[in-house]
Image 1 (cartoon, helix red, strand yellow):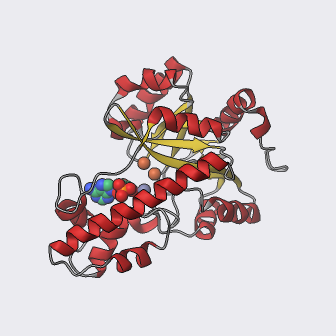
Image 2 (spheres, protein in one colour):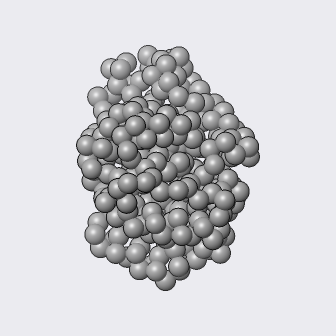
Image 3 (cartoon, helix red, strand yellow):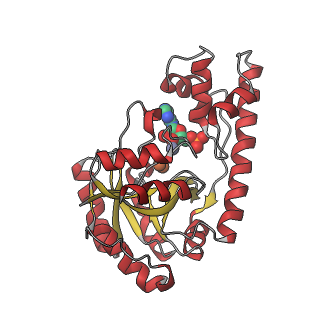
Length: 285
Ligand code: AMP
Ligand code: ZN
Ligand code: FE
Ligand code: FE
């Protein structure tokens, strides 16, 4: 019984619909999945329904773009209440600044005489939480670039001509917001941050878990983070970070986290937010 707790849909920068994502989860034999779109929970309702139809357990989640001591980090919020007022308010703010950032970046590309428009990017993105991968795809459609990587290398990555810094919520506030919305806060792909020395301070800020298993983590890296999680009394989570076709190839199925890890998350939730506990679907377990 395996799960994947890090997945994206077209509600942020993935390419899958919620229905296709659930069908893929079924095809790979997953018994539970979490949807972790960037700074939005808009895909959760549909994914929940699609999962129910296929007998898959669904965990409502998000991946918040945060910052701590000058370092960007992503905080996963699991089992959140997707109707929570402050959470929705914060996400609306996130989406507005994301859209403004896209406008600024497109303006810079236009200033370089490139054949791209805001409208082309927003139409292609077709979501409220757009990001640089959508601009990359618009540049490919406009035949300016041949690949997403090329678009990032030439224009979109930090300090390239179209780059504009991104709004990030302070990690301590992100953890508090996730808790306020009834969820568990987990540090995503710690290897990509490479600031293990910050983990104790995040633990002080009540971080609940570490994403030890991720497509970019080698087995020895996962083991390293398992040991850290154990040392700090943190939950162990994992997921593929599948963006559909947006990262070259679909990654769902590449990480199989034992269902036991979800049970441990629920045990922690039973202590921190007893009212949030979701009954396990009857039958298979
Ligand atoms: P944004 O939210 O606009 O900052 O875009 C972040 C997304 O862009 C994430 O999904 C990253 O994986 C992706 N990304 C970041 N850097 C690169 C890169 N050099 N090549 C391809 N994708 C990237
Ligand atoms: Zn993404
Ligand atoms: Fe991330
Ligand atoms: Fe992600």
